[in-house]
Image (tube, rainbow, N blue to C red; front, side):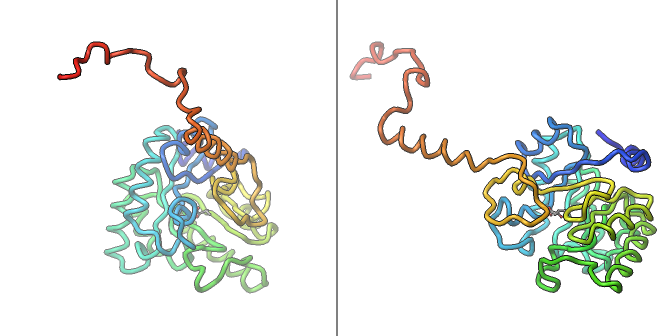
Length: 272
Ligand code: KIV
């Protein structure tokens, strides 16, 4: 498993960091088998595996449930678990209690918190020993306020984002996720910060990349953002399900090959 120091070293040596989301045991296992550097148990699980419209309905209990499964599937990979909306940004006491619960119960290596307003939370969580990954740019928990659109696209917004990035670094963030921002801005922030910057929809000049498992493998997703590359096509599973359905109905499944051969009924007396 990569350590935080090794991730920083990767940045310093210009070795790109790979990160992918995972939400359950098998996807985590696959990510580990593929040697991915970091797994994110993103609150995108609200859409990808729970079928909500956004991340807004996701609870801390959901994150704990999925985070634990991912840890079991990828015991040797650096796992980050998202703080969902409402679990942080409420009060210092509640924020830290939730952060600690999430960190302890999932056995994650770090938690992730969305938004520049959480700088003081990042500082306090770091002080009590919880590693935090910051997330700036498009922050899906605030979709109701900012919508799903490119961020940092005016001079003022870009300057603000650069400032915010420095603030979260100074507060102790171990890494920064930058989502949906112009690639030259992402490059500038990556160069200015000492912590690894992981981009999604932020171009190629960040220290690493993160994609959502279900997007990149086309698994039950109807709409794809511009920045998603499809690396495989899990929609093929539907063909197997259709064939299974037909074979059950026609009696072709199960065949001899899928049936236990032992005969017992000759030994069973009708009156037993
Ligand atoms: O929840 C998530 O999957 C994320 C990524 C989009 C970075 O935060």
